[in-house]
Image 1 (tube, rainbow, N blue to C red):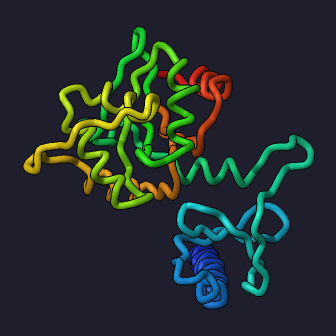
Image 2: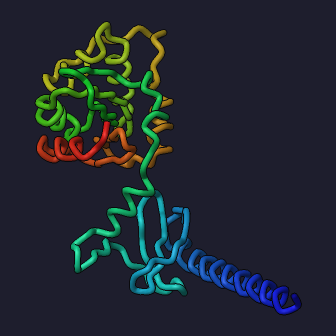
Image 3: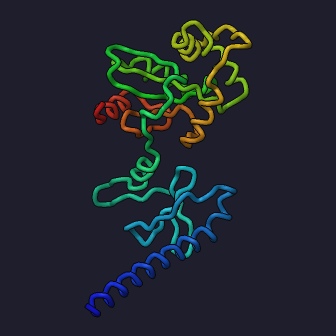
Length: 240
């Protein structure tokens, strides 16, 4: 009985020691690295199973360092045997969202074909890449429901254009008229309410740093204006 108690106490002490050591490493890394991040805050620190590196999460991105925080590695880690991009997999994992939590009532809804597949796209009306995405990929994509969040991050003028489109009689048509055809929506009534501020806060919460950004039913995302083949392949991989 005494031996059993002693073993339990030793095990508890060992666990406490390991936790303390881990906390000490994290504190050291944070102390040495965070002041060099230009004001950005470290969200988490995690030891990786490769190369003695520690994963440092900052603003939805991943950096790497040693346990003393003396060196900083910026880039992706690949598994040479499988060619897997381990960093991309981790970024995708930590940036996943719960699609059902998106406030879809604050987005423009467009149904194409049977509408069974679902995506949400964050776009700025002044974004050239967003216009290219609309004029090519999304224009040719079928059997999908697209929820467009007008995420105004490029200029003050973006807010005005988004308001005009939101307050138009047919928002979906007004959006495509502008993004595809370059036809501006008529000026909105001054008292027309929009979700512009709410969408801006949402995009910041989701750490969307550029437009377009496409979200899928499984919570994953793709940044940038992808081509139709890439988008179709992604949609095929998701169980709707």
